[in-house]
Image 1 (tube, rainbow, N blue to C red):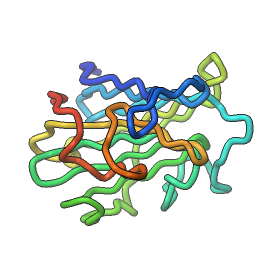
Image 2 (image 1 turned 60 degrees about the vertical axis):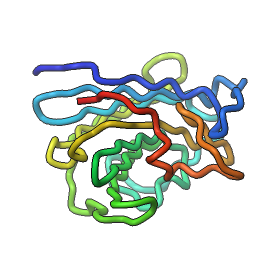
Image 3 (image 1 turned 45 degrees about the horizontal axis):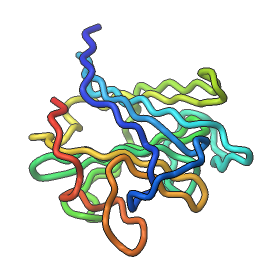
Image 4 (image 1 turned 120 degrees about the vertical axis):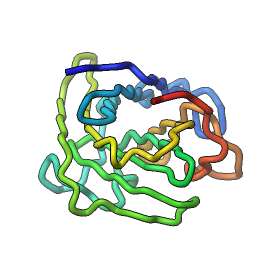
Length: 177
């Protein structure tokens, strides 16, 4: 299988750019190009009281952002894709034509997904492959996030009075394809 490292995010600051001193909240996102599609791998330390849905591992969970989750938003010329991987091995993929204007919720999508409860250092890891046909055309920007309880972390900080991840026009311009 051909693998091409596209982008790596270290998520160590709060959404507004303030440093997060608690390394138990620090996550990572790795984006890798494969023949099958865009592979996203998320890692995050296990929390003392993890917030995980009571649903079988590997399932799609609506509103997954209400649990311990690592997210990545991918911005194309006409759409952006939100990919969420949760601490219980769950997933959610949504696409948008504008901030919070959903175009597709992918309820019938059956992703190739792998979840590891322990990858060392008290961390979980989840990997999903998004087929190239689902990746926004003209991919040019991305950002990655961690949500744990009331803690909202962001790889590239965003402005505002409260955490708002749906600001695709403010994401880091990056060549990821």
